[in-house]
Image (tube, rainbow, N blue to C red; front, side):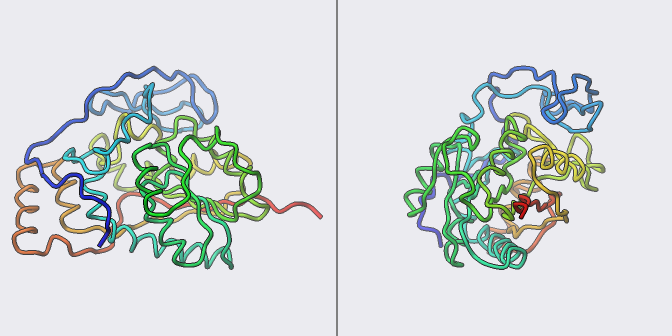
Length: 312
């Protein structure tokens, strides 16, 4: 099991909403700069809008201090639709998902090298990549997560990627796992990704798929609509457009799945029905089936892109 501290173990039986934070209205699309947008619906008091030109979905407002929400409570929270139920307790399960991802990277890239994880959280993926023989480094906006990752012996830089003075063409692979939807300027960050990749280097992303079946069926009830936390919602077409706008070559996408425990699923499903799923969570603890993990499609996609090779 993880040696990180278990900072939060309690479970709320009722739905807990995240506190309101200062925001500003965004009038232009971050992808195409178009000012026309149509309202899709309102989620927890925030309008979700879609660009009238390129189709990128975003929340109408953005937080003025985006990093402020990623404190210790973000990684172990009673809010069933915000942050993590308990990153510390779920670390071993998360690493099962990350082992699959590092194998996929190695199959595509063909060799090991230097890897940068953008939005690395507490470093679970970096630990798996390091164990597989990669020279790893992380970037993380959360001061708390940066401190925790460094305590695990990892090289992690705090801040926004586009604002850091990292050497150009210094990484073979850059990953953004459940990260690009949190960015205040995704195209600027992806342009920084391109600058940092060696020619021929690859980027691997995982992000919620707003064009997927779950999102279309659930509408405003889709779990991944998280105002204040998820600022953008990509479909394959708009994710490709963002990567190409940053100068990267699109190589395709597929549906993504992650290992989750019954405990985690019941905890998160409290958003839809607090009492029944709190009871199921209690059953899982009482009869000890809660920690059992299985692979679940969670409405996300994974995509690949590459920095072009230099011309001869």
